[in-house]
Image (cartoon, rainbow, N blue to C red; front, side, top):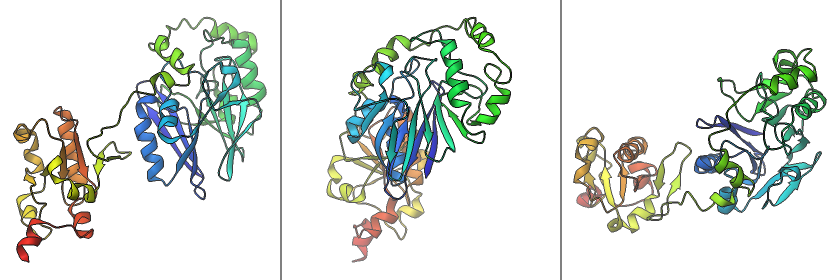
Length: 356
């Protein structure tokens, strides 16, 4: 199985990508709106197609990316029936199976943090994705969204702590730098729920946390009760070229499109002088600005015309787009594969024409 753990630093949320390498089918658990591009780019780079998104609960600290992912991929959107959310493609009950290729997850109802919390157990019992029901040495709060400390205690002790001890626990959040734990560890070391902690101990602890509400609760909960569809029109893609987005956060354009549309963009070659005049040649109409001079000379570029940056293989041109973004130029992309790919595809260069 292909497995990746992804992170949103603003809300300390973990998103999980699980994929079947044979069929290419993949699931995303708890995607975050601001990282939809990253998550879909990563799936594509790994040869995966997202067939469904899963929510562990209706989040109060971020808006789900599920609605926007469904808009872009036509995947299915899954959430617990008990969540009360509207607009899902499938509503899950305890024990339901969610297949992705030859692999599957089993839905485990674990209410308490919210009434509609759902954990997901991998088919071989080696991993469980617990959302906020069980965190590393902690758990989610129980003071809003029909939360109940007594119900959460029951969910953890009767459902999650009943799993095999080696089962790895992947939480929905972490605020102290942890990424994974195990059932055995949490049974023994969780200060809220482990050891000999009774339900009375736990409810007393949770009823006196005194936490402020999440900063985005007034925005996030209504959006997430609509499965993110309120926000699904946001994050529009640039339309000045057929661009692709990498998981490294770089927009790229294909050599063939650039060769067919040279007048629609400014081509900025960021290689050194020796390379500009070297064996690979350079693209007709390209502007030569070495990468080290780009920040100083960027004002020479037309502010109304998009920019495609070029280098030997794509590394420096990717960095050039980052520099331009910081300087306020968001309409820029890197030439995918650089001059090496340009020449490999048989496209002309200035030097190539001069030699003929």
